[in-house]
Amino acid sequence: MLIKTTRKPKHPCGPPDVIRAKLRNWYAVGLGRQFLDVERGELDSVLANLFGFHLLQVGVYADEYILAATRISHAVLLDYQAHTLSEELQKSALRGSATALPIASQSVDVVVLHHSLEFSRDPHQVLREVDRVLVAEGHVVILGFNPWSCWLPWRWALRWSQHPPWCGRGLGRTRLRDWLSLLGFDVVYSKNHFYRPPLQQAGLMDRLKFMDKLGARFWPRLGAGFILVGRKKVIALTPIKPRWKPRRSLVPQGIVESQNRESK
Image (cartoon, rainbow, N blue to C red; front, top):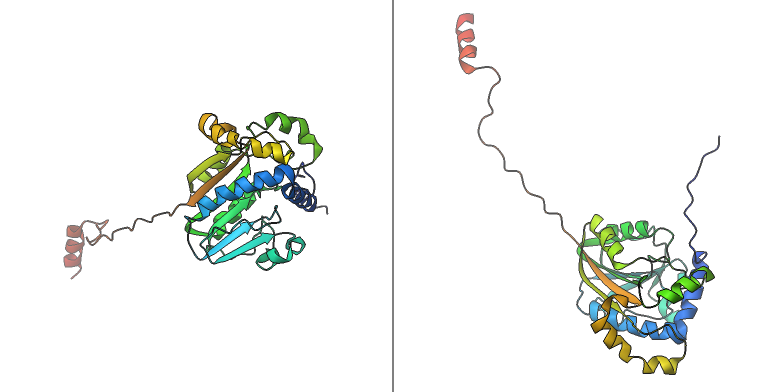
């Protein structure tokens, strides 16, 4: 007897190990390095205002520690290939899959998804796992590439190259808002960033930093990256007040009394 198994669709960037290697290389130099610096600044401003006991970063696509600004003492990095990280990152790393987190339910205060959704074969399952492990009023911080940014011409030209970030699945803030709403999250913060063209010349990119301020003011929707913070809502249970009045009888009381008298 043949049993049909449902296979997860292949990611356009390739297998997970290939995606990790290519994206870490991209973040190490040139444009990727400039982009990571801006992402870290945006993440620092968010993490400084989030508190709790446990923080979990799902997916390590840049071989650098990006959680330095957190005030949460216990921070764990989770990646399918944790053994390939640097020795410094391995000290706080845990091996595991984003679609099946080896974490107890309702035990984490903050989850950071650093491009874990757009480079996952099943982003819906990743969010469901985040919802499972977060405590009530916990926060998820999502960093991603804006599919409708000033990088759109380069994205269309290079999307078949199987080189991140161009081959990543475009998940914009509007779509993520809808997904989070279905899971019972409120989006409490959302912002685009990085308005420079995707050039590799470090000196030229440094001279174009003024475009980040101009873009944030005049064309905020065209930022190449975004950060979004969702808060897990608490479902309030309304207690049912007990009814202290005696329940009505289906049979009239007078009939019961007359029947009792006749039987005596």
